Length: 352
Image (cartoon, rainbow, N blue to C red; front, side, top):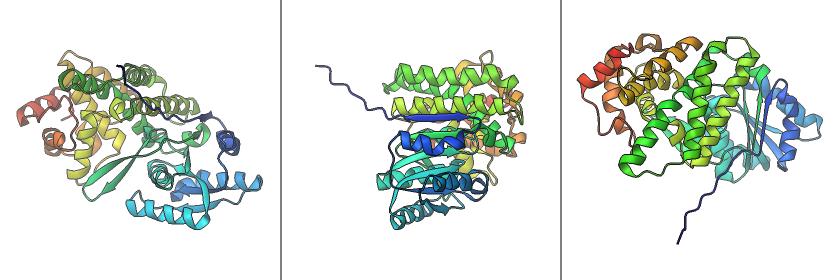
């Protein structure tokens, strides 16, 4: 008897484009969220967009509560939960980059309340996904949560964000290339469940960024449009798969290990981009597509070397040889790389 089943949770409203913040209340009402809104933001995004969202709700007769967080920590999640309970909030809006959105997402999941994502930077695909990422000590926890019911991405606002955040978002998407390869490898060798649809969507998203890399320019709102659409597609692929597999493989393990051991880690997207260059080499060899990944990253101004990441060569090699220890997820790294093999991959690809 066939007993396979799945439950896919996707955003019901995705509003992307110029002036999208002006449609925030409409997008929320359309998914039938009711009660008092709680707007969760970090300091700069609060000034850039959070106050505007609050004003939009006030003009419609709502009385939104507000909480500003400094960092993405489990303590911040608890603080938002307490604020929501004190305000008797009906739903939460996360306004900002990774910090505010991840914290609001996790708090909403704990409270069983609806969540709306309002990104102010296109820095990673967490703006749509059902996972939150919170650092703790020398490690980072990826926590399952509900994906947003609605996403409101104003490209005018996002185009004004620091350019390095946009290039980090692009690099995060381009790294889907190797994430999907790792997922397929794990399916073949370890019988890990693989979704053809989620894998194809994730890979198509990465290809779209690689093909568009030359037209993604600083200050162009059209560039923000391209990147946000790609981030949305990547998040949807994860929701379809029911895991982060479509967008997280060995390149993410490498980045997480850098977070643990590097004195001054880079942006997540930049680190996974550099990791993707090396893991693509491990998958396809010296004549493979690793140079396409590198060239696309270079075209958008994302780092392609350890020096550009601000990380020394020995730390890169240590991260590459120990990244398999981060979590129980089979990738091309297998049960670990030798130092000579890691050094060869990093040297041939020009990372060191």
